[in-house]
Length: 493
Ligand code: NAD
Image (tube, rainbow, N blue to C red; front, top):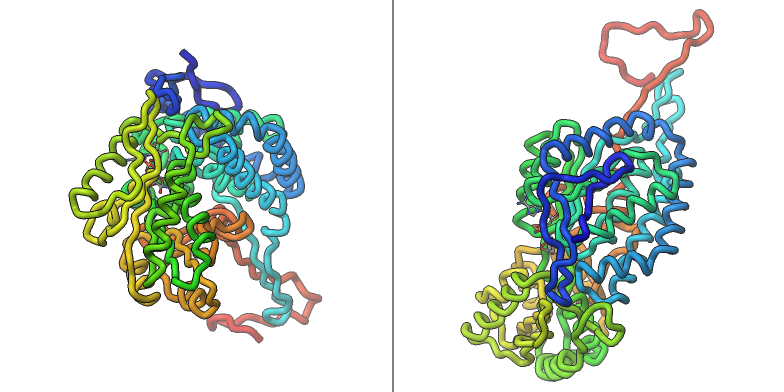
């Protein structure tokens, strides 16, 4: 049985306990991953803490050069990384390649770190006195990440943390551990010193030990809302800087003046791509007015036409779910919604095969009281609600506890502008279903989709992984010219 080890201080490290890793397309166990306990957590944080002293002194240009080298290696190993993702997550290969590319874009942003870390300078804030500010790294940063983007979500964090001069301990999801070890090897090949980037595998116990470790300065978390809330509370109580991104229920509002074919194509891809296991998946369509019936007809036709199969098969458009438990959760939600009075327009249950497959499901006549609407199903289920007006649709979006992403489909600039200004959501698409910001912006939701203040990557990522110093300085002036200071609180002269 293949054993997936930690990578601490540049070398593989074993452990005393392990968890099974599966291929979701077959349901078979393909390996086991070690689970870090206190000794390995200490070893990983210790390795990162020792490396920090030297790494934080490395010049900006050299740090940037390592990011350029990593960027090229990620491009060269794109296919290998995508295959590792598909083998453990199940998503189709094209989708896996897409996440590697989007993750690499964060490394491209990190290549420009000398520009991002420029400080401010004010000459002569008082006579003979100058003031300036600059930002310094924090120390050891920890990243705890979900299963659904084994390469991209970690890349939202560690390239920026490391380019800013920090060292990093990544705890990947125990369900998709292998790609992170390859990324660690690529960092080493790019010239990153041992100990700057460490991979600590594990489960919730590993995560809890890591986020409260006294030598960890900051915690970045991406995962489900209950865990994000817990990580934010526990790490904050332990004195860490924390950003914790949670789950989502993303609404696409379709107005009657929208191009309904375009809207249906885009919503279908966003609802069922990666089997709905994306934090930016569209899981709710809100059909406004007379858009409803023609939209549902189009959505149903497209959902039925999706080819479901193993992610490694080029004919597949949608792969399996991550686990048998996830498959059963989706099935239960669909059954409950039908019992509650929703209309099951497309039924993806009951697919043959040993893997964790559920086909696209489309539920019409869903109401806000149903669990299928209230909960993040995180599977290939699109629920349709109806609203009479744009204002009613906006009120629906805003009443939902999540605020990660939302989209509006319309041909009216006025309606789009009203929507983008009024919704309480962090990322908005106008005729774009998955409005994932580019690497040079920052990614993050509002409300129950984010705990903490800063979004990830882009300028907010740089701020999160650094802290500012402000210096006020005076240099000795020729004898007799310096002003004498009195006992009063100094003010500018
Ligand atoms: P999860 O919350 O179960 O696990 C995320 C990570 O936390 C894993 O590394 C896991 O080992 C660890 N963990 C699990 N329980 C823990 C606990 N009690 N204490 C400490 N650590 C714990 O999430 P998942 O199932 O791996 O991923 C899917 C979820 O992630 C969905 O809710 C999805 O919306 C969300 N997600 C959000 C974003 C975003 O940007 N907001 C991006 C991707 C995924």
